[in-house]
Image (cartoon, rainbow, N blue to C red; front, side):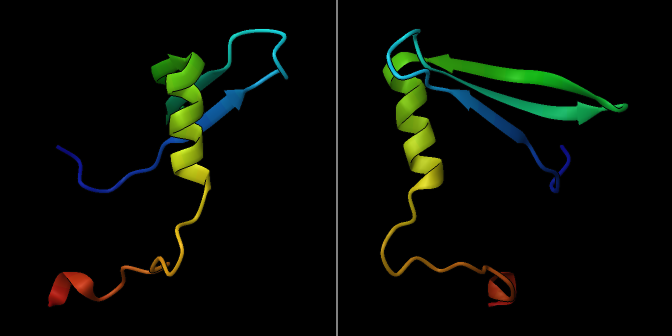
Length: 67
């Protein structure tokens, strides 16, 4: 399993017009491949967890692996 990588997260919460969605993808050979999709309350909860910074949260994990 690859231990380093990145994902692309996209969301659309259209102010109640449609059910909100959150997509998780990765880039493969220059194209984005969707890994997973969430909708409704689950999508919003994941969005909130990814974007709202906790108080006094560490912003860097550099050097912690060597402890």
